Length: 109
Image: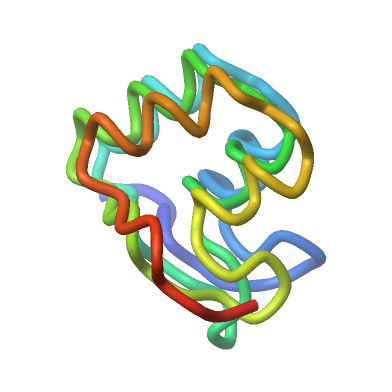
């Protein structure tokens, strides 16, 4: 069997959340294929998609969306992924999220 791939702990919560925030594309590609939950949140904080969006990691954002990440999930720190990308000035990521169905009028954060 192997280690649990979705444990929560530390600053980012899960391995997928940490890899998404830090831009580790190959790790992000591998983790969902091995059971990592793409919409996992740490204490209602942030999802991997929100963390990748706030850092402008467009390739990771695209991968997570293809793996079923919910562009409209709310988190405490960044609101939703569109708010995170917009706040940080990542136009390319914001456009990508809108094309994939992010709701422009959601409130939160």
